[in-house]
Amino acid sequence: MQERRYAHRMGNMRASDIRELLKMSTSPGVISLAGGLPAPELFPTQDIADASCKVLHEMGQVALQYTTTEGYAPLREKIAARMNRLFGASATADNVLIVSGSQQGLDFAGKLLIDDDDVLVCECPTYVGAISAFRAYLPRFEEAPTDDHGLIPEELAKILAREPRVKAIYVIPDFQNPSGRCWSLERRQAFMELVSQYNVVVLEDNPYGELRYEGENLPSLKSMDKKGQVVMFGTFSKILAPGMRIAWILAEKDLVEKFVLIKQGADLQTSTISQMEINAYLEDNDIDVHVEKIKKLYRARRDYMVQSIQRHFPAEVTMTYPTGGLFLWCTLPESCNARELLKIALEKKVAFVPGGGFFPNGGHENTMRLNFSNMPEDRIEEGISRLGAAIKAFL
Image (tube, one colour):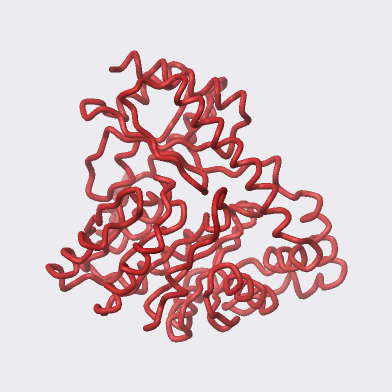
């Protein structure tokens, strides 16, 4: 066979650890604590079926036709209103572009902002899907350290001072993937005060912001944005259904116009019928009530996983205590390599995600991410018991 001649950027692309793990975790008998999957029993299947029937019966020809690249206007209006109410976004429909999942939005951000050898700052650990999306555009990654209160502003200041080619900063302030941490109000304020001194774009990813289990919502970075620097990404995947692939970019109008040009070249538009189905669902149902059901179940599953870890893991393993989101982050003793541990864990029929993949420049191999949203309590207990046994055998 003739040798393929790929673009040089493909040399920078790597398979997703999580996607590869999801293949293994589907083996019979394996309890998967790996993927960040919502609980399928919470999908409002009947309500979405009703919305679909309504759309097809009342506006079928519109729903099956092309729509604008920006997205279905009534849905964009609802998204803007919701983001204003929950996160202080100060947006109109003109600030919203509907995209086919947040992953597409992240890819568009890389395409819009990153040239070869530009610097992209990520809080670390960070979402592995974002690393994958941005890596295609050949940036140099700078890792901004974090602690239990979020990104450390003093460390970011050092990066910005020494790196003139920083184009963008990617962060997840609310219940971060993979650590589950939430930035404090003080850290948010200090971050925005710092970045306002530089010509950089802030990419604020907010897939988990509505899934808060304790306390009140904190202001989004977008709500503190005085210079139009913040691009906010949101999605229905975690509060409705990921298979519908409806998400959005919320940004200043000049940025939205550029994103529209990129989307026109990528896929013209996001599915008309899916947008209209979600719009109809929002018209006929109280999504806040639905989100409360999600939070109640996930809060209980988080508590149960924490208790199970306390019962089954050795004392040398530390963990975060997330006040929202889908994930819990564990740190093993320095001598432990979580990728090697995974081999033992899979023999014991339990899967997790090794933490090294959440650092774009590598290292931190003694960490791992656990998901608590997708498994009932008895499976969480059994999975943590198996994983605890694997850790004890590995130490």
